[in-house]
Length: 128
Image (cartoon, rainbow, N blue to C red):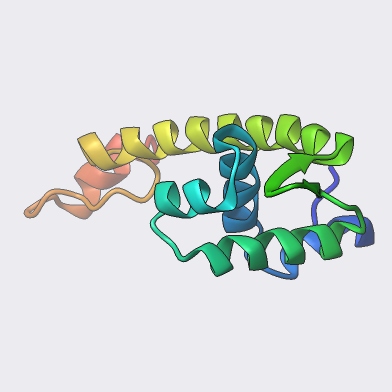
């Protein structure tokens, strides 16, 4: 399985806070401006610009062209937006799975109820 640690080409995604950068990219494309994206993400507009610059530099692609006062996404930015949608879907599934553990207190690392004996724990785990 390819992971960012095993494939040098994937390490570029670990250099900076990639998730905030992808959020900035998505917001600028969907909202049409860095100012509106900054407002939506509750950050300063220069933060959005910095995220976009770092992301483009890390990936080695130009993400936007300036037409008048408007940022127009390049084909590379639109392709990255599709990948961002996939990343968001994976994170949503992960959050849903982890939410199941948070809500009912079960899971492989759940804290046993107070007063539970070692024998009861072993029985519940199928080890007795």
